[in-house]
Every structure is written in C-alpha cells, then in structure tokens.
Length: 282
Image (cartoon, rainbow, N blue to C red):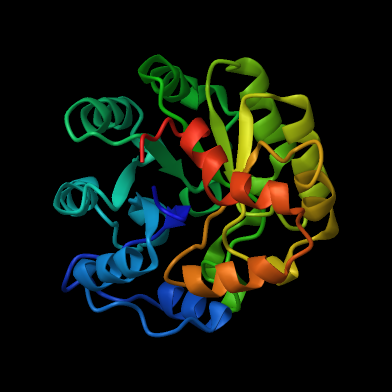
C-alpha cells in the first residue's frame, strides 16, 4: 500500500509540445521548479516517494490555444506504470457528441477512471443544460468528474489573466446545481475554491455526492474553513492532491505535516478517502 494518493497530477506534455505565454505566466505565478524532463522522470519521483498518483489529461485548446495533453498519451503512461498511476481523461465540452463518444472510449477502452474539466479554461458553465448529456454519460459509466473550482493559476499575472474568466468556476450555483440535478454523479471540486471557500464548504455539506481535492495550494495557505470542516464534518470528503509539477508532492506533504489537522484525519486525507471515492484497489 502506498503512503499517499496524489489525486491531482499534470504529467509533462508530449515531447516537442510548444510552450505558450499562458503556460509561462502560470509557471511564474507558482514559482514552479523546473518541470520533469519526461514522464519517466515523473514516474521515478513518485516511485521513490511511494505515492500513487492520478494523472490528468487536458483539452482546452479551442478556447485558449494551449496544446492539449492527449488522452492516449496519458493512457500510455498509465499502461507503462500501472502500479504507480491511474488516469482521468479530458474532453472539450463544446464538442458535445464527440466529447461523449470520447469519454466512453476512454473509460471502456483505455481504462480511465474519471474525467477532468476546467470550466474557466474551457469557458463553460457546468450547470448549462446544453452539457447535461455529457454528465448523464459520466453517471451511466459510473466515473467521477473533476471540476476546477475558484481562481486558477493558469495565466495568473498575464495581461487580463490571459483572457480567462473566473466566473465559470464558482461553486454556487454551478457545482451546486449540477450535484442537485445529478445526485448519482460523483463530483470532485479541484482545489480550495478561493474566493468562494465558504460556498464550497456549503456545497460539500449539503450535497453528499460532492467531494474536493486539496491541490493547488500549500497547506500552510489553506483558508481556515478547510481546517475547521476538514477536521470535523467533512473529514471523509477531502483528498490530498498536489497540482504537480506546479507544486511538488514533497513540498505539499511537508507543509501538511505542520498544518493543524487532527492525527486521525491525516490518514483519511492522504489515503483512505481517495481509495474509497475513486474506488482504487492500491
């Protein structure tokens, strides 16, 4: 059994992928260390730390110009390192029927265990009825959806934030509506959802099919409600996630060790909750 499950990993893109101003701004915002040379270097790091990880594909090229991290590429990494990683696919929600078919292919043929969305980068509201057939498919397949919540570091500090609009990632009404309309769908909110952390906690408290990962922030910078509810009513609903490579797991875990979580809660956040929520057998 690994010592932890990192539920939010961005693998290095395929060799030769061009870097964009949006990505440069993101790296400056996070003050990120140099990225890994390739997927093998990433895997070596997670193997050495005894951490199982969830790799996230990305697909928001049509709205941002950012090159995707393709589903088949991520599936190949998981296939090479099955004891270390599982994967979430990504689709462009604006592709509608094509997106639905791709989700089914990724789950049934490639073995993905969830689907990743970034409403700000993909410029869509999750509670827009136009996208409801996509949520129906995810529910039918029994896979969770991961939705970025709150401000994004993507493009942060660039002129106009790179043109990205934070409004798409408000927990209320977008996630709350989705959870109410699809109670059988497992929804994971990615990141403490600044500036809507109180709203985020309210959605978690009210909707039992909603969970969250704690990626994108060092635990030393978590808003107080994350500690208050993470130690009590929501201790079974939060999961460790780093946001690698912007935040490395070793840094996150070191800061987590100093954060004011109760000892009996730490094992849940680091391992047990993800195993249950994601139905992992690691």
